[in-house]
Length: 567
Image (cartoon, rainbow, N blue to C red; front, side, top):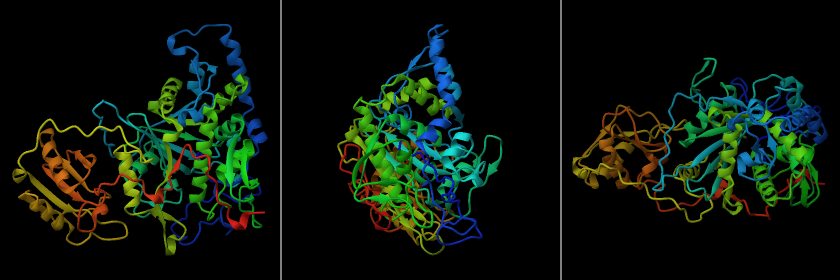
């Protein structure tokens, strides 16, 4: 839950960094006045956060008073057992209790379309036990669209501006509910945006150049952020939850303290105004309120002063918060629980599939099944850009796709044995390989490189050597695709398509039914630009080291302080 904080500043701090316009290439993103823009690093007073949400206490008190005068009119309006930490429960399945009216809280929750893209997301494949995973995209918005968010976010010149999705974390709950994997995508990630159609009908065309991933929120809403993730990763997303400043501060203050660690004294403040204001002594400190928000938003002072270090700090906070909440010693004051639930639901925007408190609570119960030792936090493997894109990051070839594939295939990121069942064999078995017709095309082109010469022919030769004598090369279509895939048009060809995948070592999760093809069509993707065996089929299911995996039970995690921000 430590993640949902946006790029913003308090008065006297830096303005939030906006995405560079096309006429301002190169280097760091800068404000209009030429100063380096800080991203999500400004402090916000815990007292100010409480004042901003103070009106909610009256509503909560009213709810408590009414509960003694009348009974719910129906089962749907019954008083529900609600989570102590609310947002933490929704995200990481912690516990607690409180009683609020169902319809009242439902009215607080804002809803939106799951995806605004024009591509239908692939369905989950159930395992032999009939279980399917759950993928939730957590989005932290930097919107200044309310008095509370404006007080917390500062930067008056941005009030009412287009919000940015400055924190993006994918939460993957395994099909058997034994483990939870989290992937953070740095806000500086450069990628192509898909076409998105806003609820009001406005169309945002697919981008022709790389732009920063946090721009997706301004292209119609969180449904475009979902579409962008699906375009990049191929991971089906079941739900999204978007959270603003007010909810983060209310939760951090109500939890009552989360231990975090730094390896040196830190003061996130420089002479030119950069930093969150976070000031801690070396070692472990229990933080809440203002300090918690400062920790979550600190960029300058952790590691190399980039968003990558901040993501690690957010992971440490999230893991520590879950451990604290699961001890059952936090949030015992009913009044605080009521106020927190009010603030949390008012700060929450979800897809229409999570449009009631009951659905959110049921989701929380699913997350609670995962022990902390099976929670794994990670960051999308990445590399820094060069030249005009210096300071920006790109998915790291091979490693990023390996991480995405593990999530698509429901492989635990902690390296422990999975309870996954092998994919069921198709009801229609394959024909003899010599009778299977396969069309192979070269889809290895990327934004940076053209198609790798001869790849379709090389893969076609591999199939022919494996006995697929009716293999041909489609030289008319060289449109690039991120990952190798095999498409088939109808159920009677599913077995044949899987036989092709097995022969090449391509994961069966990359075999899809599609009405866009008339026969079995193999697209050699950008993940297989070089000759040889398919690169992710070498027998390993190991999380790449570049993902910086952090286990939920790791109480020794400690942030490295940048020497320029110590005291």
